[in-house]
Amino acid sequence: MNEFLKKLFRKQGVKIALYLVAAFILIDTLLTYQYKSAMNQNLANQEKLNEIATRKSSILSDLNTIDMSIRGFLLVDNEAFITTYERSKGQSKPTMKFLESSLPEIGIPASSLTEMAKMLDKYFILMDRAIALSRAGNKDDALKIIKEDYGTVVWQAYVDLSAIIDPVILEKKNESQVRYDTLLNMSLVFQFILFAVAIPTLIYTVVSLTRNQLKRATLFKQLDTQNRKLIFDSNTQTDDEDENLVINDIIANLNKAATFIKAIAKGDYDVKWEGFTKSNAEANKNNISGELLMMREGMKKRQGEMVRQQWVSEGLNRVAEIIRDDQTDFRRLCENTLAFLVKYVEAQQGALFIINDEVEGDRYLELVSCYAFDKKKFVSKRIEIGEGILGQTFLEGEPVYITEVPKDYVKITSGLGESTPRSLTIFPLKQNDAVVALLEIASFTAPDQHVKDFLAGAGKSLAASVIAIQSSERTRLLLEKANQQTEELRSQEEEMRQNMEELQATQEEMKRREAESVS
Image 1 (cartoon, rainbow, N blue to C red):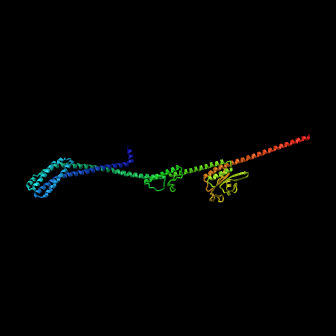
Image 2 (cartoon, rainbow, N blue to C red):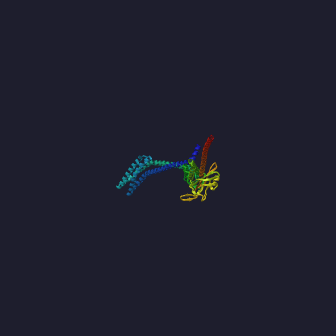
Image 3 (tube, rainbow, N blue to C red):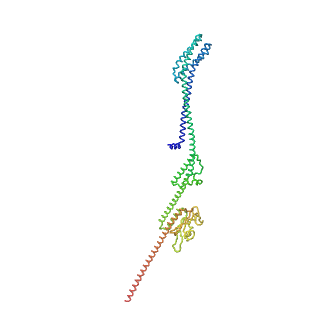
């Protein structure tokens, strides 16, 4: 249970504290509202009770005023006293009506005023009669009414009424004050409790929020650092206190990574990482952006190698097809193969030389085919062994790549004029380490390694074909020579047979003649 509470307060402590303070404030607000309501009610009750007491007291005051006004009028016959009398008399009825409606509100029946109302009515009748008698000149009768002192009876009725009303008013005032004091004390006590609880709670909340803010600031600083370290560092200063900026930067880098990976998956090896420059290349060498770029370069290189390998393979297949189709015609084979090689490697000129050793002791390089070469280049189709670049290459047996071609060595002619090639490749074609031919190619660009590999493979195939064709040609020539010798022998035998027959016929004729001469 303690572990649960610890985990709860560790994770939700601030929320619990805030909810607790909010609950106390809500309760205090309700109590304050009740306190204010009670205070307003108490004031209203006090005012009501005070008004009842005032109105009740006004009865006695009016009685005293009426008594003095009537006595003054009878003594000096001044009508001003009558005006005061009439005013006091006029206030009596509203006062009695107010009391009749108000007394039931405090628990006193309205019937308690019945006796008082009757006496007041009788008192006012007597006073009106005394005034009338005085005005008629019968002052003695008027004074007699006054001397009867009916006002004392009314006063006693007032005293009796006060004995009923005053204790109730006092009780009601005390009850209202007690209720008011109780609520006031409750409010004060709860406010003290609220103060005692809320202050530590607020302190805890402030401390927790401050600690959380520091943790949050540290977290976002670490996020920004890890974002730069693991994903991509733009090498620009970022306000790590701006949480939205840090989050947006992380999201942007993740989107960049996703976009980059999708492009790579689609085979787009030229895709770029937005924002990756030479200035921040070192900072991103070991993070995701750097690794992805290295992966892209590796895949791009492998893709290029595959494309080049496929290019070489397709070219070699095409050379094999040409050799297969033209293996019975050596000249056409050389011309078609040379034309294809020059076009396939996107060169401008080419020539093919084979070793001619038909005459014993007279070996030389013979031009058997050329492509786009100016005829003046080769005035003679014969190049001696060791003569010039071609003859020397034959002796060394290694490819020669020349990037500074002599101006007068060869010219590439087009509709726009003449130009000296920038690259010259002389490739020896070998069979069993013996050079059997030389391939010369001139172009405006130096050959790449895959072009060299292709020429090496094509050279092997062409060399084998040349040897095969030359062997076939030698065999054919030997067969023809053998056949010719056989025919010659056959002719000589026929001639000898005919000579023998003629000799035999001659001998027989001589024998016949000898026999005839003997006989």
